[in-house]
Length: 118
Image 1 (tube, rainbow, N blue to C red):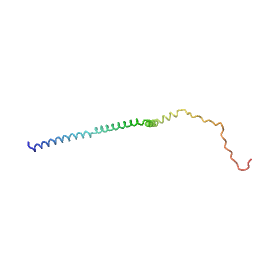
Image 2: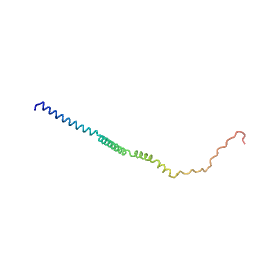
Image 3: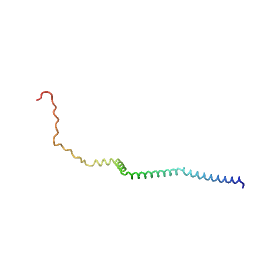
Image 4: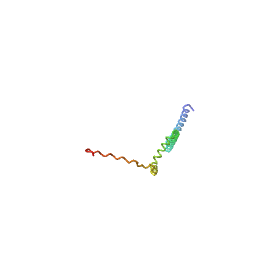
């Protein structure tokens, strides 16, 4: 074998390997662009983001438990406002009755008339 034939054989081998790499790359790209694969990847990303958000929320609740409890209580009362209002309306009225004063109220003065006085 002479030199041109050897370099031609090497070039053919390189070309075959390059075609093989290109074919495997195309198969990989097609697999990634498959709608099911894209949906799976998006769902995984959303799941990871949700887990991170939940983790951060729990850490925040641990740092500030009283404000969170207050907000949750306010939300609960807002949601249950009608039943709470009905329950409070059923409670007896314990306001003391207004006592009548022992001294009768003063009568307003009589209007003065102009003229002779008696």
